[in-house]
Length: 114
Image 1 (spheres, one colour):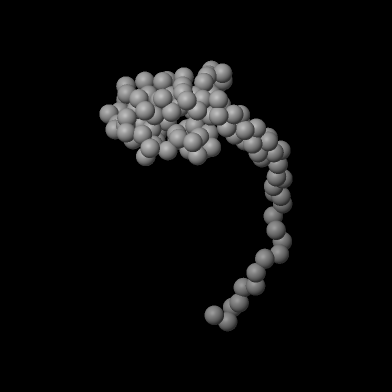
Image 2: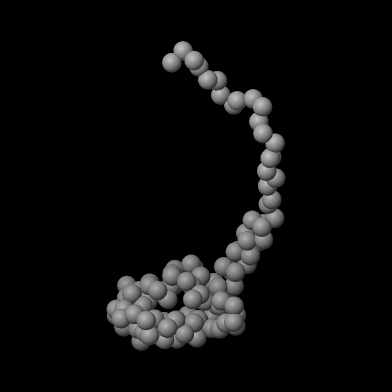
C-alpha cells in the first residue's frame, strides 16, 4: 500500500499513517521502528528528510511528527508526483521495432584453425 494510491488520492499523511498501521498490525507483529520504516518505505522519498525513525521512541511520537509536518509532507508528496509522472509518460513513449528478417552475415568470424 502506498501514500495516495488509487482510491486514496486525497488522503493526508496522517490518514496514510493510520491506514498503513492498521493494515500492518493485522498482518505483522512489528516493533515501532519496523512500523515506521514500513510507513516510510511507500511514502514519497522526500519524507525521510523530515521523518527519521531514529528520532522517535514510540509510534505516538512518530504520528505526532507526521501531523506536525503535515503541510510540508503534502508538498513533498506533490513534488514527488510531478517528478514521477513525466518519467512514467516518457518511458511509455518509446517503442522498438524488432527486425524479424534472418541475418545473412555472421557478426563475428569463425575460425577453423582452432
